[in-house]
Length: 499
Image 1 (tube, one colour):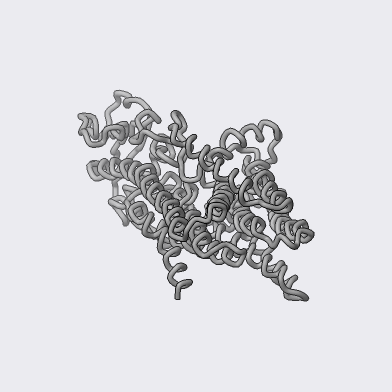
Image 2 (cartoon, one colour):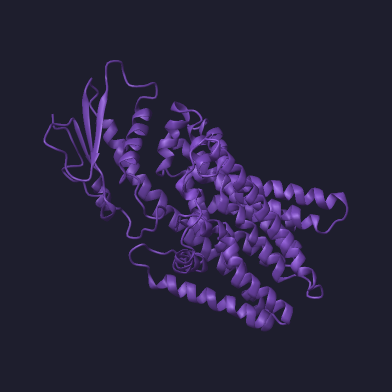
């Protein structure tokens, strides 16, 4: 009964934490265009994602968006993502228990993973829900391979083969998510039986070898697709030509962002609290080595996890020619440092023989802090600012006079007109309507909601956008999206009819 209650709590936690974000009315950049493309250009999303090596992602998107017609219905996909993220937490908790972690420690890690910044993006961005599917697939693959190493005969080969297939699927869904397997791997390695050190190398080779072999097969399969001209190859699929520059980028961006765990970075003025969080987590991780790794073999394992596994966890991004700094690509790396930090907490509890209530309090404080930050960040830096942009567009569309030649001009907001103080990458605090194509897609989505059966016969409109005021040629509607900065104050140029 206790296990069932814990599983239920882990499953429900993301829904509770992210519910304000899930139910908020908004879209996020590609959400708007994909709603249209899935109907007007069947198969286009599949081609687009396949060009980036993610055909499974495209298939999942095509299938799910076919049941979504309006921006308000994007709530379904965000709710699905939150539910799947909860499944990730349950699987991690179950596997960590089998790896020797205590019930509370395993549950705390499973819960904390669902609250990381990368997870907030996966839930907050409706079309990102397949990433949560890939995370589940990666953890399930690790569990099958691990189970296979504890049985003999044909069953061993069968389980490892099934695990390899799941890694293959995860890689073709979202490559970096397949690497999430390093999280249960690190947790299991840190607590492996110290009396069997000779098996460590074989155990690591089987796990990491199966993972990379599956990803490599997927890479070869996609190269065949590109070579045969089925779809064009995206630039990010190229191998990084400057490895040393990429390593410097890794140390300056993904590494500290992941070590900070729940703390967020800022594109312009990263708060001191972020660096304090990085320093604090680093100190706790170091205590794991000093207090938790008591034998030589345990120290070797800790060094492998802390110094070598980070490169495995971020290997896809390190190999790719792009320098993506978004948090959605950091889940394997963030999850790895979360495990190391929890190992440090575990070592502190054991070293000072803390009473059970103290351990419970410490783990609860970590999860509660993570939950509070996750709810706040997802709502105030994703849902609400994106909702404000959508509100302005919806309001403007409702005022548009319908005629045969209506002319509309959108004054797009540049980054200084954003409605949030904080911003990072294309995720937290970012704008959608600053891009010409995205602003037009938002307007089209609002028009589809106003006229679900299409524009009245004989009517049409011409939509133009720009960062500055419109040229003096006469427009039926001018929408100043720069009002985002002070949305509560009605400006005279909010929407104007000039003709």
